[in-house]
Length: 584
Image 1 (cartoon, one colour):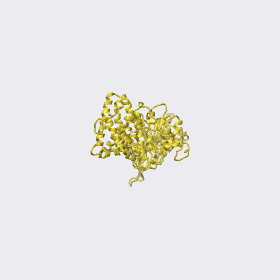
Image 2 (cartoon, helix red, strand yellow):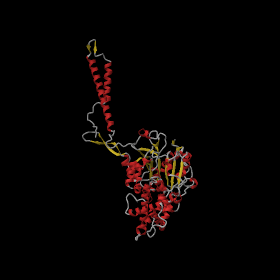
Image 3 (cartoon, helix red, strand yellow):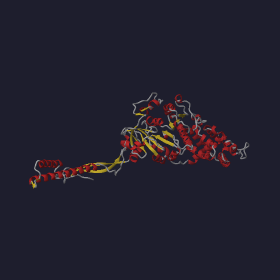
Image 4 (tube, helix red, strand yellow):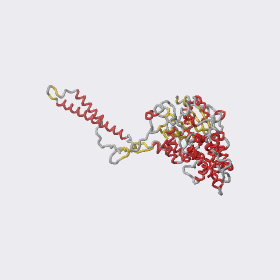
């Protein structure tokens, strides 16, 4: 704490001392020199002495005032002991911007020359965008247009593919569309199809793949029938039984039909208990009386795909499959059928969306391979379209397709080729194993951009540990204006922005000393309080180790040439153009 005091007898002011010195110097210059012809002029010497004395006093007072001024400035400059948070300037992060102005786009800076913010990332990024914040026009569409790599886009209303498909194809990208709801078919065209069971069929036909079959069946079962919330529920045993039953049915169908097996055929098999038991007996090689099956067991060893594998692996695989088939028979034919009833009911409920209806045709024989995203000279963009009017049915489909895509890409030999996942409304379609994927996805070239409305909804779907992992593993965190979730506001203010040091000034009167006494102290306060963030018109962007950046969201309609390339939003029915703010 510093104090400045008022004195009863203040010293002469600097202007007064300087004025006296100036007058004495002028007087001395108009007198005879102090020493003339070896004789001293006493009066002239006295005046010269006082002139020099007052000049020296003037210099001393000038230095004292300068020291006081420096002290005055330094006393009002915080030391940072309570925090060094501050908003970033362009100079600090200019070197990190993508020079080609391609790649992920985050808006326009609000300081300096107001550059367009193109920051790339090699692992994960997140955007928190409340309803009405313009995430579609300011984040999703601009990133679809700016990223010149293969992409997977979750499109919950079908508007994104309508707006971007023609523009991407015009610049020679391959566009694949999974549109089981046939939304906007006149604009999009015929939907592609992809069969998730291709993953199991690939395992059976790929040399050495037999040892991956059971693991992939477990992973697929967890995606189809996930655990609710963060922790396992009390019915884990029954869900695990349903997953195992589903895995057996899938395996039976794929072993027989390979790439022609579909979720529809698996569902029909589970719905028909008699046929399911007959299939299990055929695989196990026993009839209803426990005797050898009249047609013999299903000849796994003689199948064409079995010849691709080591005989020892085939023998072990056959023993395991037939043992599982026998266990299923025992479960179905036991005296107490309640356990099997619980298992099969869970499996039927999990597979019901894929059995018959809009989803079934889009999950028939595949019209493309997920590996296309990692292969070829041209980039491939895959749109996975949902029907918002049937969200509960389609969210299972979206999640399964995203899992299939990531699984295929993780196994591709080309680990360096990047594939971006623009996952809008990621809370609407749970991705099984997302927490682990956030930590090691970059090793496989998977770059995840997760977009959702608030942290609470993410935690509700994926759990607290997944939320902690997300916050620690994201290189870039974008918060659009209009944040209103208390949890999100607290996170931004207290954990991400931090505190800044500031000088607090006060004044007081003392009976002993007349005048005002000034009191200075250093204190800390948040760089922005939750209420200040809530009322901000600017967004906040965190890029790796840089200070937070204040940015202005910019829609594709304000960016040339995207404003002319992007098509009409089918929900609006007319072109969307605004005053140009960025020219690329």
